[in-house]
Amino acid sequence: MPYRSAKPPGPRGIAGRDAGDRHPRYLPGRLDNRGRRDGRRAEYPHPYRIHERQSTRSADPRGRPAGIASSAMDGRQVDVRSPRGAWFSRLMAERSVQVTVGAWFAATVVVLLVARGHLPFHRPAVGGSPFVVQLLSPWVAMLEVLVLIAVTYGLTRRRVVPDVAALAPERPVALRETLGLVGYGVAGLVGGLLVGRAFGVHPISYHLTGTLYGTTETVTPREVFVWATYNFLVFAVAPFVWARRRYSADQMLLRSRDRRNDLLVIVVILAIECVVEFVGLSSALFDLGGRQVLLGLPLTFVLYFVGTVLPTMVFIQCLLVPRYRRLTG
Image (cartoon, rainbow, N blue to C red; front, side, top):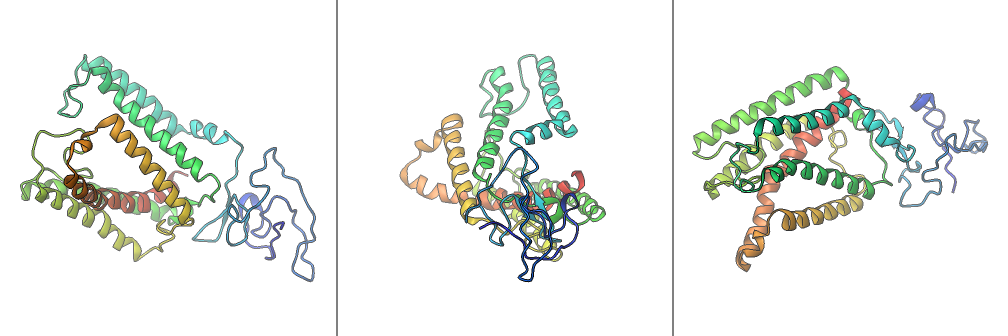
């Protein structure tokens, strides 16, 4: 059934169009006595047509066509449709992206000139690898991240993209809160150093000691418990309590708009990461006994979920990302 809005013209929106005249197939027109448009059709003003044939799965539950998003704060809709390939051109045109790519290449060249075939870092997991392998490891890791982004984009390409910037407060408030959150994060890391020393364990950070590059020192169960508890309280519970007093679950990106698709993304990314970890990094898991696997796998999953995943989700994704988007556009 063709999409026709029955709402009277609302506040001005994207590209100066009224909120009731968003669908590109129909020109603005008068409402008849049954509350319908006069039916004047218009062709797409651009050479591409995305979601021209609406289906029940791709259409929004509220009746909006796919590709039209609405803001949780002020009800604005955002047309997220764009020509194929245009997103990459816009991305590479961003000054911040150009600076990042240039700095990455420059840092690699500096390492080649300064290191002279040896990296002076204590990394037992990769310390015995050739210099070239150690130098290329960050490139491979970045390539993996880009592949995961591409897979995620492919799995969610038919979903409505939320206006993340609109979920954050106005720019002056967003700037003040961003500076406060960054300062709080630095203080949390300093606190992790002090708490670690007080308990006689390694300094506490987002990753447990030895997670990324291994360690020759002993990590006791007591240290693991202190690490997970500290990160959970400082970077998840405290920021969550502060934010929920001021903002809704929608504004914090805590409410799923498509649980089935979210579950699909989680399962696919988890499967890819497991293959990469087992094949490309370490297969030590297969050397464990059956009892060790049955006890260690769920325990490790829960501990890292509490100590790393939840703090990252709340502190970075729920709070900092919308504010960064508001400030940078």
